[in-house]
Length: 309
Image (cartoon, rainbow, N blue to C red; front, side, top):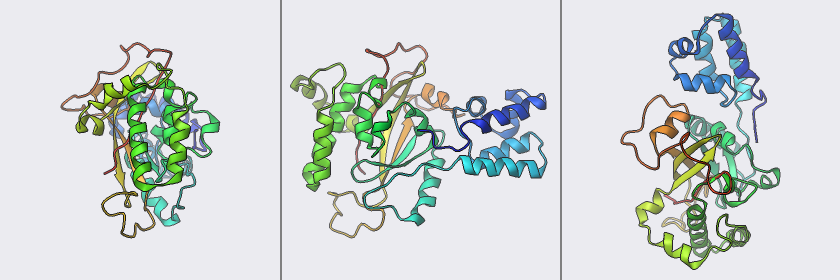
């Protein structure tokens, strides 16, 4: 699902320019004002830098103005986000605003979805986490189906049963409130998917998770095992317009009605560090991360549920 035209070449180019000047990653990171891990991810093509980031690196490298501009122009072209169709269609003048919001979340994952949880756009970190999603799940790219499908993120989730329960609970609730037939069809298609460890998502599983409090549902951890590390997120949803079925659903919702921002915030220090953030989480909450965690049962795993604000 890489959306960049550059396809990682920009990171390699910045690495070569640093080496030509005999600078270490540590020195360049300090000059540019970034964490060492952030620079490492850029040079390894694990993260696509935006134009502002490239400008800081180019200045730290001491490049002449013309060369700086060439790199910035390349980053601008490479950094364009992938946009998908939404229902209703997203106004063209809303895209620049939403793009700023999504890129502003970097290095944390974020995406925009419509009223049926079809992906409208996602930032580069989220795109990286979804890089192994099968192509047949991208037309349309429905996030709830991607989360729970065995060809999507389900194999990477360490808490698949918990996430599946909360996704189904939320989807049934919104389907009943809105009467939207599309949500009902989505519910049926997801219910038919294999549920990982449980051949059937039984009543005992319902009872296990139904006892959780409202706060636990709001801050459901998303435990995603990728590349030898366990990334743990809290999932937050922010509505731009009124979601169907809210207290204000009888009011005109405007051009962004049903559109929401879905943010995935690090739930512990290890996840924050692995994503390249220079500051630690305080207080540290959630499950512990990564390199020391064994792979989840049955291979890898992934994430999600939703609460509308």
